[in-house]
Length: 117
Image: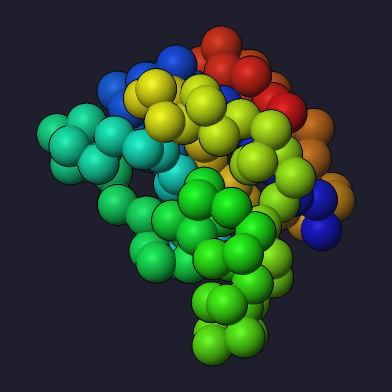
C-alpha cells in the first residue's frame, strides 16, 4: 500500500479529485478530507473532517489523545507541514492505494493539477 497526501488549492478543486478517486474505486471510507474551512467543504459537497482528522490538523498532542481513544495512527508529518495551508482554506486528501495502482492514481491526480506531497 502507498499512502497519498494530495494538496488541492480549494474545496471545489478537491471535490473534482475526490469524485475522480471514488469513480476509480477508492473506498470512500478510506479517503480523508482535511481543511480548516468547513463551510467551503459543505458547499462543495465534501465530508467534513472527523474528530481524529481534526486532531491531525490541530497537532500531535490532540491526536495522541485520540489515538489512545480510537486506536488510530498519530498525525502525519506531511499534514503538520501543511497546517498553515489547511488553515487558509486549502484541502488535503489522504488515502492509500495498492502498489500496483500507484501509477494510475498518480496520473489521475496530476490530471487535476493537484500537488502530490
